Length: 418
Length: 133
Image 1 (tube, each protein chain N blue to C red):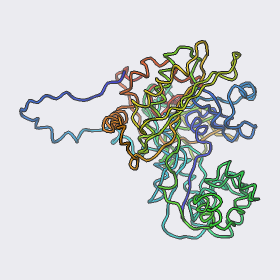
Image 2: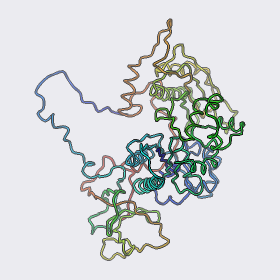
Image 3: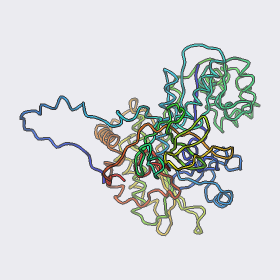
Image 4: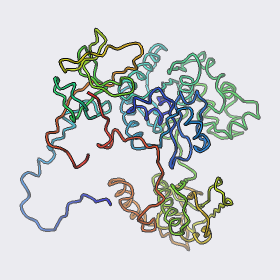
């Protein structure tokens, strides 16, 4: 049996842990630079606030409705995530942390329904008591069914935070009520194509002949169909494949017009992306580099993006930064008030199976990069960084509504009235 | 600016400190004072109503959410949007201060109340800490 435990609107719930005065209020959390809404607590959701909406569009209505607005406080979320995972790990011998707010638990024995319901309740109660975060728990005989059960636990009526998909009957109860895009791994685009074939619910998807799904789509979709019928096809390692594209992009705290500032910012993004690339042991064959003004500014909208192909696929930060500097002249335009910039590494392949070029030797130094990454992971990000990123980072984040880091900064620990 | 805490070393060989083998015995207050790391948080006491229980203004409170709350335990709770430290009288459903003339707060229907955790230690900072605060 697999269980998926995940926190209910994690970021918004985290904001409530050390601020009891906002626990019953609607709370929304904004992305980096306070750009758009990334988390909405259930109360705010009921009032009609939604995720992924630019903040300026709803700022007024949020204020009028008395919504508590917060900037992303990652040091708080990371600490509470750690506490959540520590607590969950007590409930199973085998755990896999899937993301900041969800983890899979694996049980290699069978038990009756009542056992799983009770265990789910116990996990919820314990996490609520010890970490002060609300979670949903879904049990399924496969990882995909555990995900589906978790969806049911939180979204479908008749479930109070726990659901068990243990047999055909329980699947027949839940899967017809789920959109096909609610199934783990079925994205919006895939969903559209399935809809065209008249496959609209998770139940309909589960009834498709698996072989045929592989022919139409891919082995991933075949696996999904099999998993929906209770056949385990996924393992932890496969549950998250390496990324095919790595982007680092961000809007500036304030508009910038200076060429050097743009260069620094692009170099910074190049570095962030390169670290991620090396972490998954890959090299990139090309990268896109882009910068733009804001479409909401009075001046005409400016956006320019360029593709830079590497002669030899690379994962060396020096090469990737050099590419951003090389195209700077083509991207920079005097007078434009830049709002956003970034880089994207594309054409990514495994470093191990990368074919060398007979005539162009690689200029990568894996040993140097490994050393750099080790130092930065040990002593903190940017302990060593490239001069191309500049020293003073004017494009640092805007976080106007930041809460206190109640568990990671002594100055911020809560005050308790006696 | 970040500093890397590496010790400088020179290639001179002398007598090794006889204490070298014992460095791993370094004591950690966390180890002693915190039982259940992922369920523990730390706060500052503000106010004088719990002095009878040895909790003074400015003390550090170590609060465990993992502990069971029994009758008359010193707890931290959230009461109507505020963290408070009181003794919990479970039988009469009221919150007691240790100051002698203080009236207990009787928990009512309208109170937004949740036990946040048990105060497992309180720490007096006899000399002000200026370094991190």
